[in-house]
Amino acid sequence: MVFLTMSIGAVFPGTFDPITRGHEDLIRRAAALFDPFIVAIAENPSKEPMFSLQERVDLVEQVLSDLVAVKVVSYDGLTVDFAKANGLGCIVRGVRVAGDFEYEFQLATMNRHLAEEVDTVFLAPQIRNSFISSSLIREIAEFDGDLSSFVHPYVQKKLKKKKDR
Image (tube, rainbow, N blue to C red; front, top):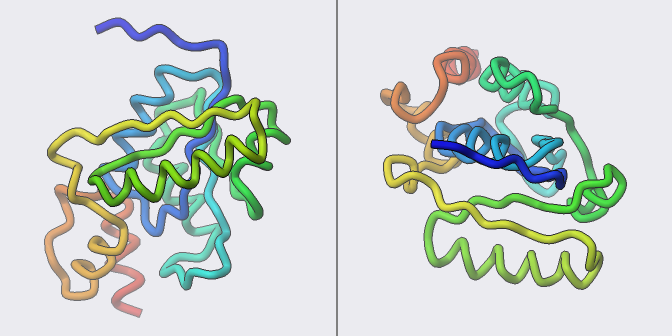
């Protein structure tokens, strides 16, 4: 399969608490399409993440360590402002189910209103990843469930360490 890289930069934003195989799949596919490509980890103070911002950056960097062209950064504020400030013309978002689409469409429309020069592209996950969410991963981890199909081994190790504290 041949992918053509677009000469437009993109950002894939999220809290990644933690990064899942679903996130990883979408990032790898989008990174083959956009240059530059940034994974932007949101501080998002309204949520109470399991992992600190720096821990989430570390998790994503470790999982994506083989993708040398992908930059992983943290940010706060509006994603559309981050995209504009970094000269990125596109926000990449994953859409798993219809409910996701409704929310993401509303967000994309608002972002387009705030910055006409920034588009949003939606990617659908592979079927095997369509039901995975970070919140489900945290719940399974809480009860020592098998996460090997859903997260990278490094993430699984860090989840276990968090739980055992």
